[in-house]
Length: 224
Image (cartoon, rainbow, N blue to C red; front, side, top):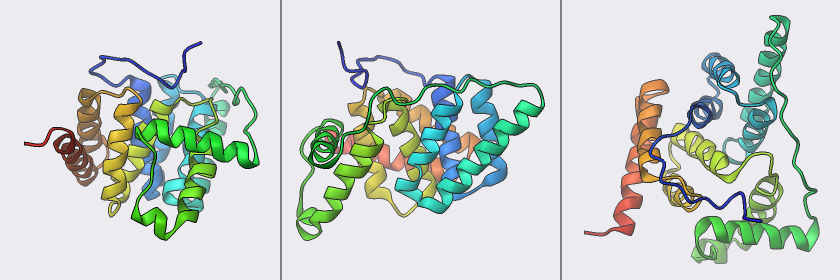
């Protein structure tokens, strides 16, 4: 069976569901609750499930902290309840299909996920200086979170790009995730659309950050 997180695609456009994830992730990261509420409604309207949205907002805490994540999850809970009261029964979606490994098995799984997403083993002076930071990344972000298969890696990366573009001051990480996104099969054309989407539907500064990170990534792989 092929790996559902390995993609070969020539798509030039983000789906409506992918677009919705980018925008709501950006609003959630900066705590813009009125616009997040609107974005959550729009995401449900285009067919995203409650489970998928919940998963994205859980992942948010790895980038923007627990307060933003918990507030965004509360917003989703309230939006779902409000829609239910209006007679809209949104699709709940599915839970992860497998249990998450523990202990050494979790570290091994997270390390494998990190390596696959990054394209090579992740190491360097920073992690020599603070090796526990990379262990946390491997066991928790790339292990506990990325092992949950009710949201695919493309969706997780699009959400991450929305979050990091919104936050500001995290340009190295934003650029790194531009590369990681292409390793999941997201195309450069789709990433350019993401930049424009943030400019038009979120904030011009967010779109500008994303665009600069993408151009820097492209320059790194195709130096003049």
